[in-house]
Amino acid sequence: MSTTSTLLQPVLTVSDIPVYVTRKAIKNLHLGVYPPDGQVRVSAPLHWGNDAIRLVVVTRLKWIKTQQQRFQQQARQTPRDMVPGESHYLWGTRYRLDVVYQPGKHQIIPQGEFLHLTVSPGTTPENRVAVLHDYYRQQLKLRIPLLLGKWQPRMGVEVGGWGIKRMKTKWGSCNITDRRIWLNLELAKKPPECLEYVLVHELVHLLERQHNAIFTAHMDRLLPNWRSLRGLLNAEYLSAEAWC
Image (cartoon, rainbow, N blue to C red; front, side, top):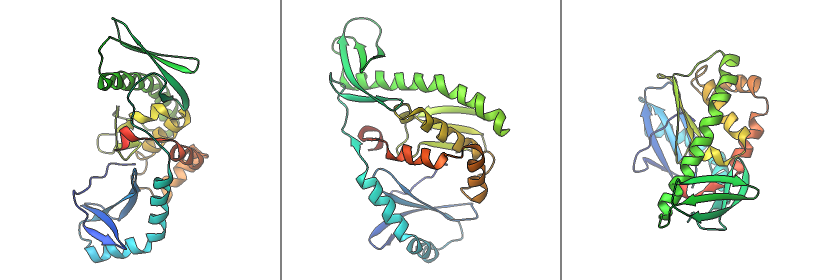
């Protein structure tokens, strides 16, 4: 889940699949398939040529196509207009939206099966969405410090800082140099254990930079059910708004 930059145009085409390549000062090649449409991205060492990259992609074609098919089949929420009766998610629970227009402070209160949204008359749909995003951010800010307090001493690591932002292709990222982690705003929609999985994943990057056997061993030791949590997260709804 570490940060990966892409080019505007694919560098290679392998079996009719465009491949976006970024060359970095790294030792090993990393290949990933990303939502929402299964874009294939490669981070390659600076000295690797296109032929060598193409060969690696060819050997992973079956896996790539499986991942792309999974993204195509994954359910997506339709774009949100923030009108009464719409479905919205908070910590994995589905709520129906109730909109109340009245002067005063904008706020969201979950109650029963409803998310009660109070906004001023004439508030635009974009501003209503902004109120929801602010609420999600507040919810994450309440939980993340508790999780850091649980996991940092257990793992023997400490972040230099953390933040929340909307990300199109990642649930989290880690800047190893600054020891700073970022978590996707969308995680407020998912079951709480998904947030914990992503946070632990990013903290493990402070112990091991790469997704290798050492990284997997840390995850197995710290969070034995991490694979099922990853599956739970990937099975959840993708937001059309967040992933477009």
